[in-house]
Length: 327
Image (cartoon, rainbow, N blue to C red; front, top):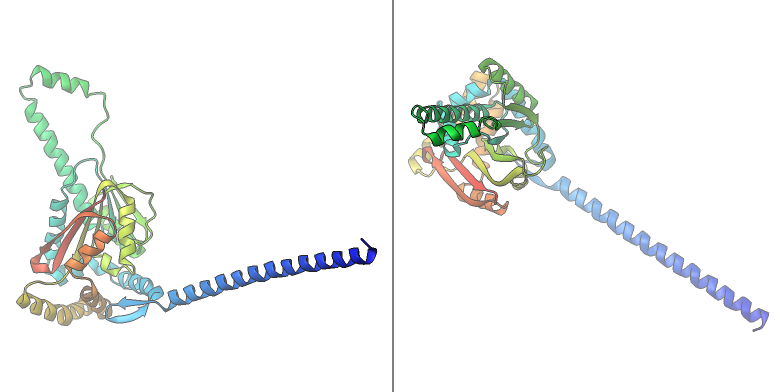
């Protein structure tokens, strides 16, 4: 091959390599641009998504901040306002939740959005009553023990004592937790109780940690209810139980009219008189109206992955107790 021909071939090869490199670089740049554009579109879409804050439509990114501010404002008067708004019936609803739960000694409870501690206090008291009942039953059975009872008693002496039940109160609002801790101190409750700052949509716990998950009058304030339900499923042990107490849709037409009139006319007034904050209580009333009805919320719980989901109306549907199991 002549020198001029070899030079021509080398130039052709170099040109081909250069074109390949340029083409590859161009494709990489195009992919990067597409990814960047996609990310920007996704980010813009996230910023554009809206949700409800009561009857007001707000960007999703703002709802959590607004809800936080509401409960920060009402924390110190929260229990008083609960009594005023529900005429004290909220205590009965919470007692019914515990009786439906029927926790046994050794159970671990996660109480989400439970800042003032009402459910956890009831849980610990209920478990203590169960332990006392078991001790009395054991004492009666040993009054005239058989040889088998005596043998069983000796064989279990070296084993660990009764399992300790624990309740973890998890709330995103530090002011609500502060009020709950103050109540616990005043009631002399310290053992078996923990307080954790955490978001229902991104719980700060490992998988499969709790036997029971409760959320009472809190899930309607969550921005993404479906995400909170999936988090509940994640942190529960297999066989664990989800329980939610929440305002719902009144089934009796007469009661519904009375309830609406009381809610929209009286509760904001009570909020202003007792807590000096009618706006926060106006939001709480509106948030109840925006929450899904019993059947729709049951479907959401099932979609999250729970089984044997059911609900029970309390006070004619003013409140519903929902439950389901993790298999």
